[in-house]
Image (cartoon, rainbow, N blue to C red; front, top):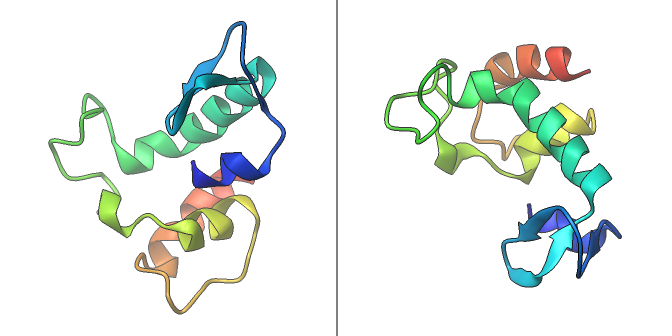
Length: 100
């Protein structure tokens, strides 16, 4: 979520989700909906069924600590696979294909 501070998608009143690092602001409802839709496309790979707290391994074998900007840039922005990425391209390719 660190990239949110670079986008004009927040305001200080109304409906929306509070921004984690500054609770005086909320994520604009439309942006909030877009983020949720993008996330739920990926959630089955990261959480699986009945595992929202992450107590069980993810179905894809991807660990939370492996998630980085490289992962999300590859999936969402169609960036080239980074050699610094901690998740294999083999694991990320089907997620990217589903999102796109």
